[in-house]
Amino acid sequence: KAGVTQTPRYLIKTRGQQVTLSCSPISGHRSVSWYQQTPGQGLQFLFEYFSETQRNKGNFPGRFSGRQFSNSRSEMNVSTLELGDSALYLCASSAGGEDTQYFGPGTRLTVL
Amino acid sequence: AQSVTQLDSHVSVSEGTPVLLRCNYSSSYSPSLFWYVQHPNKGLQLLLKYTSAATLVKGINGFEAEFKKSETSFHLTKPSAHMSDAAEYFCVVSGSYNQGGKLIFGQGTELSVKP
Image 1 (tube, chains in turn orange, yellow):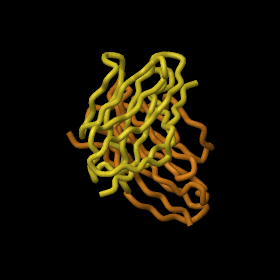
Image 2 (spheres, helix red, strand yellow):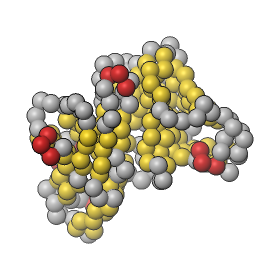
Image 3 (cartoon, chains in turn brown, blue):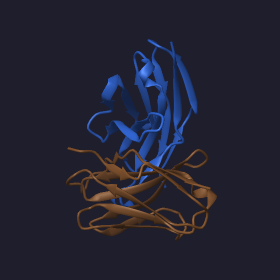
Image 4 (cartoon, chains in turn brown, red):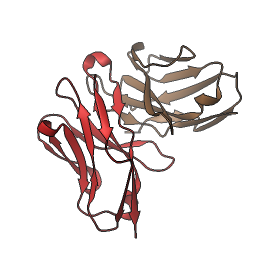
């Protein structure tokens, strides 16, 4: 099976702009989770979607949002970008009822 | 609340010597525990997972981890380090079903392997 794919791999944006990141899970996986990785804060959970519904949300401002489509692909959106949003954004998928998550390569976002 | 503490931010070993990466966890119930590895500019790769079937878990690339409930530890070991093992390692605990698949990560241990 193909692994988790994320697009784009690299993004450069300026403050105030918005950005959309995309994630395609492993075929058959219905759960998609998003994480932010920064040198200072480490890996932090953003949110999880299961069958197009947000099942859990981490402690991030409302500028961070996501959605999941009927084919389980997921997008996350960050509006009004700040310098501190520069990070590696990782997507992970898991099968329904399983807590083992498989990660994609990530999207490196740089905010100037 | 569940948490994970990795006791060393950086470990340096020589090639061919044993590796020990230490992890303690806190959980109000019997959790699933994982070790993931991240090579530079890459995503996270699952090394191994503990459920409750066996306390000694074997993973990929010769790594294994032992779950010790009395010590709330889940240390990662490898008998002989290889240069390709140089990477960052994360000890991870999973939330309950009600936490919707949220993983809680330790701060990571950077492993350096000297020739």
